[in-house]
Length: 556
Image 1 (cartoon, one colour):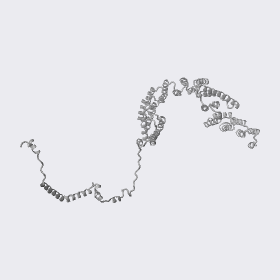
Image 2 (cartoon, helix red, strand yellow):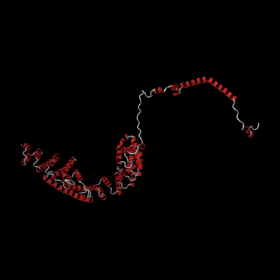
Image 3 (tube, rainbow, N blue to C red):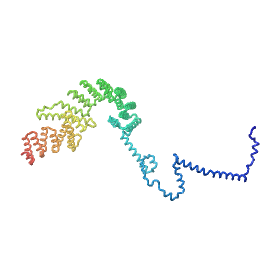
Image 4 (cartoon, rainbow, N blue to C red):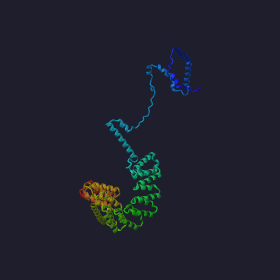
């Protein structure tokens, strides 16, 4: 057969051939075939439409029939609806009760508000809204435990955690999580803030996470090695054996911290000798610590050893008044006097040393026996009170010279009450007498002294109150109100002799006051049973010009 592919010459023969012409014969043939096609379509039209209707009905009856197919015939009928009929169709919600949907409020961002408002007053209102939201958030944080990550109220928060105690199960989980996040922010943003670490550890302790609390306070010790509170809290959260190791590391970092040494000594409470050794080591590093000296001296049972320790303590801490007074109590009269004189030179502005000197002089001058005559006892008290008042006056002069701010009258009054509580009643009266007018204007005397006397009597310091009232009587001898307060005080708290002397002074200073004569006569007759003495008072009242019915009736 060979290659059937025509050559180039053969192909070229057909390039110029023209297409056949479409003549009448072709048109006739096309009309015939069109008629045949139309006839065939007419013959199958009924069968096709019948088949389509059957399939349509089967589809509608099926389980997956669409809603649109079910209403197809009705949709076909809509093409015959007029405009008037269409407008007459009621709305779908007519006659149906509407269900209200719950309103939902979504907070709008400040950026959206600022982008929608214009300049001027609306923008100012939006910025005010932002400021108010910030203030509310800050107040809420303050309420929850602290608004400032660096300025957190450590003492208040630690106190609240310490007070939680057994109520930890009742705490809300959300509150614990919120506080945990807050304190985590504190320790991360300011790791050198010691109260933040302590608060975080106590929070975990309250939440029952003791291991986590120990881990947190351990990190706090590493971040704040110069904080006493962190080391002491770490020792508290750990077992005694671990606490000793922690405090040993703490004294290496802070060898001059008295609190850490005292905490280390408390761990040895079961063995007093070991505790004293720890305190002696602490005093080697801190010889000027008053707390360490007081703790060591308080543990010493031998009085001679305590005396030696106190002598050394006053050399190391000459500004400690408590140590000087403790040393003076262990001395005899001459030794105590020398100790107090030395203390006065070392502490010229300390009034307690002068009060102790007065109490020492009072103790060395015991009062006469009660069987001694009244005049003798009065003379003794007057001499002693004059001597002690002179000492207090010297103290006031010395402090006015050497103190930038000497003690005020209220300070001396508190010392008088303390002296009375310790049994030095004459010292208390001397302090009141020497400082009665200190820092007061003359127009304030009576009101202030009477108020102070009432407060002292309410506190049970009767000698201090009596000295205040007697001083008021001396400064205002002719005022009936002052005498009445003093008489009422002695009637309630004093003895018969004191009341009788005060009534004698009242009738002598206010002879025109008829009430004082009647009170003196009644007290003499009713309390002492001295009828003649009562009549003598009434006769003196007649002589003073009191001829009223109130005086004549008792006399009759």
